[in-house]
Length: 482
Image (cartoon, rainbow, N blue to C red):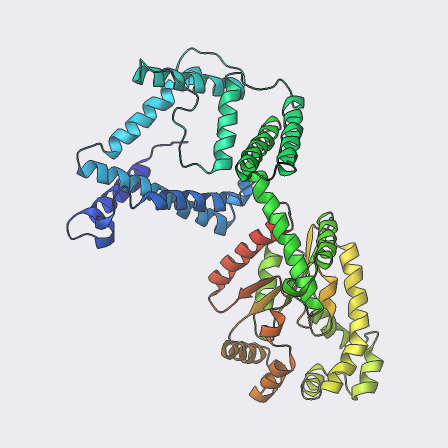
């Protein structure tokens, strides 16, 4: 495979020229106004945006997903722009150019990989890293011959504290400043906990400065335990925060179901729901409800999920099947309404609330049974259940979470008219209004939904929003990547 192609070189040259043009006279006023200092926040921001996408990439297959593929290319490009801008500004003052940045990087890579470009022999990744650090120390010593080289040389001062802790532990471990096994750091962890407790319970009184010191020691010890198991404490904490959010959302939703909020609930009530959420985390199968009013486009969301291979049960389709001739409840429906024609019954139930309740009393026991059988028999880590009546019939409590799909009312009316017309069926605006009025309003549903997805854009925009939601879902419920 040819790495350096004419097409690649042309693309790089073009973007360099574009950045130069932006900074040149008659270019972009914003770009012209930037300095090395003003761009500092963007370097950090763009790096974290790359990380946000990388959190979704666990395999080569993930990169084949159009949304992830496009997102990573875009964010890497934004990060590359920062390098181009800083190099362009340095070039304007005669300090250095992008060519020198590339040349220096290439020279460094060759120097620090003597096992590839030289005659040094290594047989493991650890050996490579050890050579890398030793070469860095030699380079530092050459630059400052009268100073003592340190493992802290070159450590970015502005790294987040937990990430910096991890880097420091990595460096001192490579020079031998580490226990031989995990017993050492575990014993140290216990010691730090005891010292923190002693400071908190000091009979002489609380000394916040000393407590702060002990908390710092404790956090460092936790990070050191992580290092023995090749676990990045930053990643471990981020995942824990995902679990915390899921558990606390469970508390909020559980309280909302009984008409309460966290502000007017006791710690005992919240703790009960917290423990309930922890038990849910051990489940091997999650069932997520999808709801939305008529014309909201929830069926479009379901189609996207099916295309990605997720199992979806359509409760509305179950209901339609139950209205067909030969269904187990055909006789009951005909006796109650004098007909089994779905369009006639639909108009009736949305004009008459009692008729609607009567239909639900007949159909929902069958729907519930079929749903229960499907959940039991269907394999998969996460199953989706599409039903527009989740909230109205109390079915919501049987799910582990629920997505509410919304859209502006006028757009919903337009969609319903178009859908019915395409089927060769007629529906008047009065019937649509009656259906929309009879359904629970989105403002009420939002109180109970875990997620909300606004479906008022194009199909491409909807696909992007669904992809974002799936990523959040995987994090919240700790699902494996798909």
